[in-house]
Image (cartoon, rainbow, N blue to C red; front, top):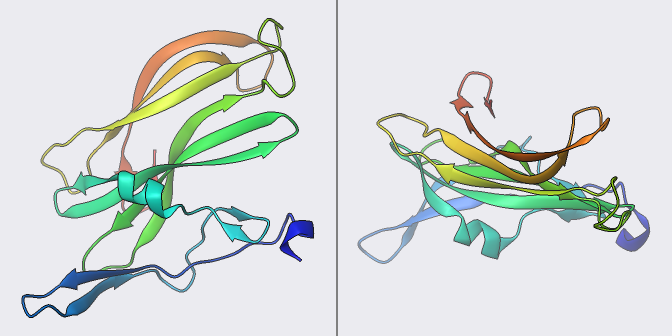
Length: 169
């Protein structure tokens, strides 16, 4: 049963079609056989509404979607941004863009020195490039990498897609 199988993974096949002048549809792209999507409890971390809302140009000839995925465990919500590339005449793929925020209010009250809650927003930066850079902006109370302390943050960083390594850095 899926309800008792936390570690069970799921997969999905995605297809992209183009409507032709005669009203018929032509397949222009699909996911490769080995594509991996975030999943747990036997369910894929793809939400059609979020994907549709995140549709936008991600490169000179690339449309895709940036959408949030998350995981909750033991009172902490961890979120990240995923990017779905929807190219024509190439495979559809999913990449992790980066952190989207975290909140441990399920473990600590807001007035506790151990409480943190930060959000990360994104902005696609269109330019004359195959893949557009994306700015991530961090705001809130964020723990350090080693969770030694919690700092107030308000900064941005730009990430770019590396087509050779197939990831955003």
